[in-house]
Length: 254
Image (tube, rainbow, N blue to C red; front, side, top):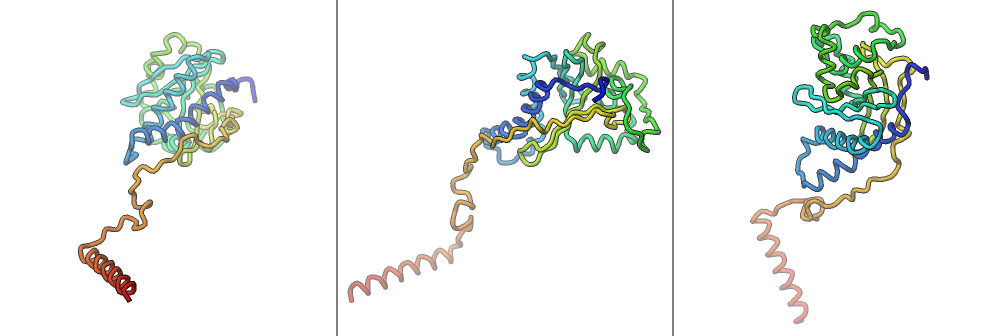
C-alpha cells in the first residue's frame, strides 16, 4: 500500500468492527426482545443508534475524538483518529452504491461528496469512463463552510485532517458478513490502493442472545396451529366424546 494512502491502526479497525458486529447482531436482537416488539419498523434506524453508542463508548478511551454531525434530522457520528489525522464515517455498501450511481443526478452535495472533494481531492482512481467528467454541484462554492458546519464539534482539528475514510459493511439477517475501509475520490470511486478488507476481524463466535418463545400459546407451539373450532364442530366433538364414553361403559358392563 502506498504511503499516501495509509489507513488506520489495526487496533482501531478491530474496535470498529466489533462495535458494528455487536450493533447489527446481539444488541439489536436484545433490544427487540427486551421491549417485546411485535413489529420491527424501527430496527434499521435503531441499529445506527446502537452502533454509534458502541463506537463512542469504545473509542473515547482511544486516541480519537468523537463528534455528532447533523445533516437535516439525521445525527451522524464522525470519528477523528488523532494519530493518523483521519476522519471516519460508516455506511452500508448498498447505500454507497446508490450514491455512486446517482451522483450525476444530485444538485447539492451529499456529505460524502463534501468530504471526498475537501479531504480526498488529491486521491486518484484507476481510469474508468465515469472519471473523465467531474460532477459540479450548485453548492460547491460553499465547500469549506459546509465542512466546518458538519464538523463543528471537531473545532481546530478540522484544519489538520489528512483524509476521509469510509467504512462500508454488509449484513445478512442479524450477522455482519463483510466490512472494509476505503478512501473515495471526488467522483466517489475507490482510490488506488485504498481498499482494506476488515472482514478478518469479524468474530466467529455464535450469538449470546438466547431465542425465547415470545408467546407460549402461539400457533406454532399449538397442535391445532391456531385453528378455532366453530360451534357446530365443538358440538360434534362433544357428542363424539359422549358416544365414546357410552361405548366404553357398555363394554365394561357386558
